[in-house]
Every structure is written in C-alpha cells, then in structure tokens.
Length: 113
Length: 115
Image (cartoon, rainbow over all chains, first blue to last red):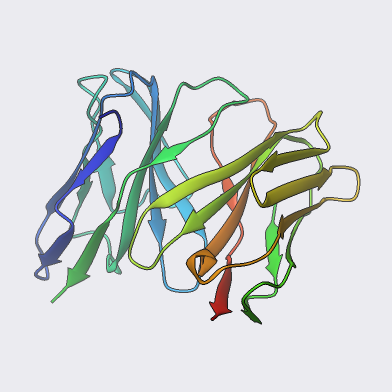
C-alpha cells in the first residue's frame, strides 16, 4: 500500500540525548515536511524539503536537524538544544505543486523523561 | 502574517444534527485551503481541498465552502454520526515569493457526536 510511515510510534528521551525520528514515503512525492503539534494547538512547521539533498528551515527549526539523502526518506533529529521537545511529531509529503494535497503519517509521540 | 482561527474550539451535538465548523484567515493571498480530520493520537486525514479559484467542494456528507475575499471557510457536516467525532483542522497554503508548500493551521475544533 502507498503511504507515509513514521517510527517509532512512541519515543522517550532523557535530558541531553539526541533522538532521530524516521519518516518514509512510497508515494513518489518530491516534497516532505516535519510538523510539531502541542496539545490544543495546530501544527507548526519545523523543516521542509522540496527535493533530494535540499531542505529549508520552517518556523520553529531551532534545536532540530534533518537530512534528505533519498527521495523516500526525511529523518528528523531532535537535539539536546531543543529545550521543550515533548510533543507529537507529524511528517507529511506532497508532489510539491501549488494546488495539491499534503498527506500525513501516523505521527511519533516524543516524551522527555 | 497569516493567522488561521477556528471557532468553536469544541462542539457537542446529538446524532443526526447538521452542523457547521468555521475557519477564518487574515490574508486572502492563498493557493488553497484544506480541511483535515484528526482522531486522538493519530495523524491527519485530508477531507477536502478547495483551490483559491473555487467556491466549494463536496465529498459525501461533507461540504466545504470558501469565501476568499472575506477570509472565511465553513465545513458543513450533514446528518452527523458518532463516527464523526474527531478534531477538525483547517489549513491554508499561503502565496508568497517562496512557494514552500507550507501550511498554516488553525487550532482545530473538537467535535463530539452523542448517540
């Protein structure tokens, strides 16, 4: 089946640790996105990539890093510099054209212990 | 700066009612507007996408309208069912010099449909 997969579903991080969230898509989409969702709030854009080997910061990129070495994969690393990382993280993708829909993965819930 | 607001934040209705969810945005320079559904602890499912040149879109019991000039969209749900209980999010894709594909989201309306 075509779609977006995220792993793990739940992730626990100790203070000072870096953790990496996985996002894979088999939709042949060029563009991929990472969003953060906090309770009772909408989604905020962390990073996005419109093409392999290229990515740009979103609105809240501090404390996060990404890579886009393959079209199918867009992993997000939450570094120790991110002061409040506990949140629900959502990955999305689309063709990149102006009018098309964004498709979302099931999300990863990150909790700092 | 584009801002998206959804009112009400929560809504509880008896089964069978028709209902309207509201979304407003401050800047009419958008490519499109999307409505999403989110179940607790899950990702987002796209319900309807309205291009900036369109006035409405329909899918089954759902109808979304767009009035770009006034910065408003509504999602109409006919004959609501308990299975419609979820959080509904609207998002706009703003125009701009950098077409990033970025979406600006509202905070969502949490709907409960009681049997």
